[in-house]
Image (cartoon, rainbow, N blue to C red; front, side, top):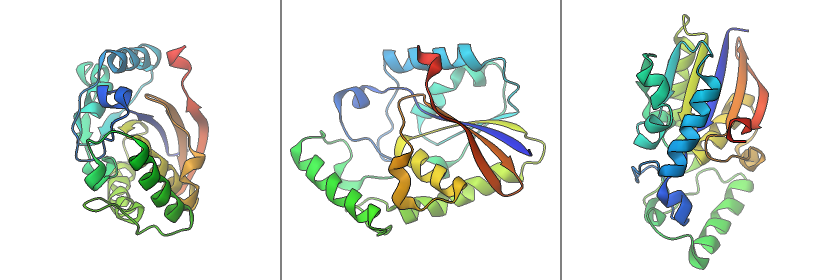
Length: 203
């Protein structure tokens, strides 16, 4: 094994709680629940000898791993880890119109139309391009063996497809909650999931 990656989703934001679409263009803070989730994750994993923390450029990921940053761990922001941009739907309530629109685009993605996107937004193919660049940065650091990565729900699903070689149409096979953990062992160019959607720290 060359590296071990701990990949988590950010904690809850008020927009998460309200069912409002966030995406790459909404830079929201954690709410009280999100901060409690972040604290629970830190309490459970603070003894893991992480060499580096990587986050997206959005502050909800920074705030989720703030305990590790405050403890002095090296930290780098990679915009390649940002959430998928939902375009015209960002900031809007997940009402019946949104549900219909999202169902339609999910059907396109599951039919392998990875270029489908909302107006002003990104497609899965767009996100994978920038995730590949982020992955190059993460894998190139030979002295970093145990790594904590904090990112976003849809982006995490795509990133896990990228790592495991699964088609992007299977992104829904990777469920997630706020601060859920996927642990990955990297050996050469092979990535194996050793912990799947782990939320034990929230119990």
